Length: 109
Image (cartoon, helix red, strand yellow):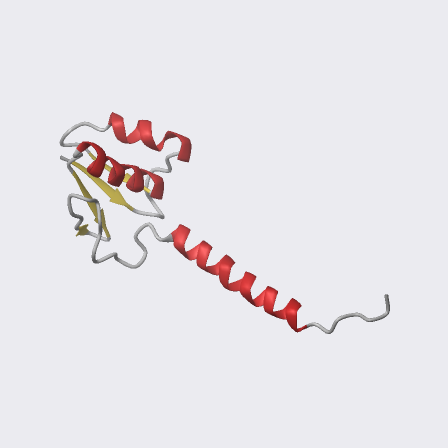
């Protein structure tokens, strides 16, 4: 089993395009600290696809997953930057669209 510790501030930054190679190079018994969500997500894919035995850790606690790589009790701050930014973008886009729809139509054409 490998252990991947997610530390977004102090972990090793793996380039997105190298996440797959990085995970595949990890050896049984190895523990690595990363700050890159894609490493975690690729490892989760390998849990389902190839039966990878991996333990995820965050803030000193094990992040439990099942054989389908589902995490039922997702800790706040664990690999959620993509969700945070997507949510922020969508929220602001809705507000912007609403403002545009509420603008009076210019009839001086």
